[in-house]
Length: 186
Image (cartoon, rainbow, N blue to C red; front, side, top):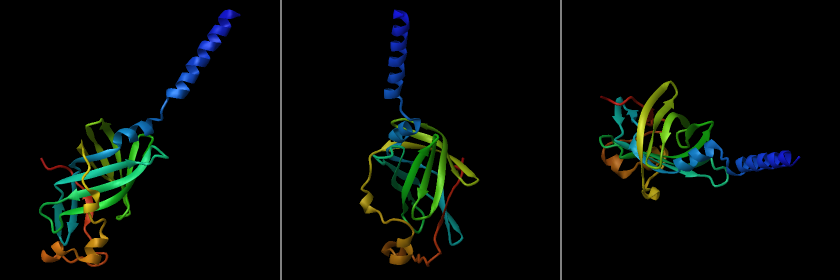
């Protein structure tokens, strides 16, 4: 009887230890994902018959303290030879069953990230945008001042940014650059 009691006690302790230390895998991914990442996401925008490729992207994932595996943040694509310097979007994101989904609020579109490797320093994987998929590699960096950006497409058409106006760029409603992901050029 003593052996049975000891065995039951051992099993109960083992079971309770799993209860206290087991964490949801999606929560762990979100915890590691939190922060600002910079690198080439191979984004381009088509406008007025031309295609402009971004030079780099900055993505900030801020974790929601109440849901743990989701949050919001920022995605800014920087350009050097386009009529605009950058395109900035607020994002909402969620990790579900290991898949990272990113929604672009201003654009009303989303992408999914699969087959990724994530550490404290590097984030690499494959981004899926409809039928298009592109591999990327980002580095963990410190955050810029996000208040320095104007967000979404509306500021192009509505406010006629002075720098763009001086370059002769004038967006009309519904006439906006279209984001797409492209394969890296070798």
